[in-house]
Length: 283
Picture 1 (cartoon, one colour):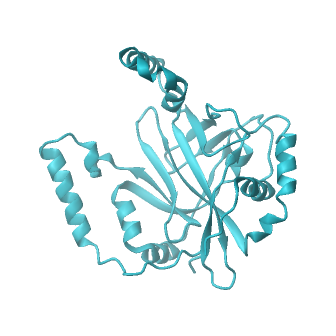
Picture 2 (spheres, rainbow, N blue to C red):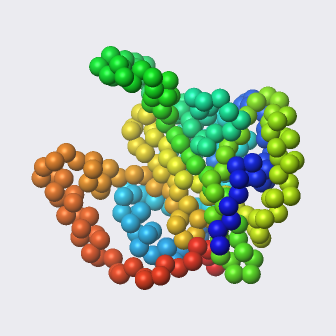
């Protein structure tokens, strides 16, 4: 049974787990990604079955990690190292709409930094877009905001039934905006009013993450996402556009990419008629 929590309740639960910190950032905090030992990785991979393999197919490289997403609630600037040779610093951007919390954590990659020429070229492309399509002017603020985003993360709250070990998704987690003074008085009042309903969350809880960050210099895209049957564990991978059919224009290269996908799909064993339950832990 999936537990449905209101946005207010989710805010109360999350803020209870991860206290709000100041927006002052002397040094980027790191989004901690901890490697899982190889034997457990194999058990996790086997439990997720073809769903894992279909994700890994689009990866140049991948790793399975446990993740501590609390820095995304506590900091506006974070460091993300999807792999040992990749070091990205990302600054959170508030959404274009004023509100207490955003549905996503959106960020601009500050390091490595795109060249001034690249930034100017992107701005000129947008100017040309609005000149050619005046009807888009009404959406200009949102379009310009989205074009600047180099990282986006969405978080989900899960509760684990202690008796069965089965995890139920409780919905997406709104991410409060950070200020020098912490959460607003209205938000604090809302948290207090939601204290009693939050007891509907049974057993232990954890946060899963899905999102990506793009290196603006090397144009490499790194994806982090909770695994479908064991969302406490995440796969981190570098997206391989050469494996994606939509990355090719119509022609022989696209046909070959499509054939590779078909051959890969044919190599997989049949999917089970009933997928295994979503679990909070894989022993």
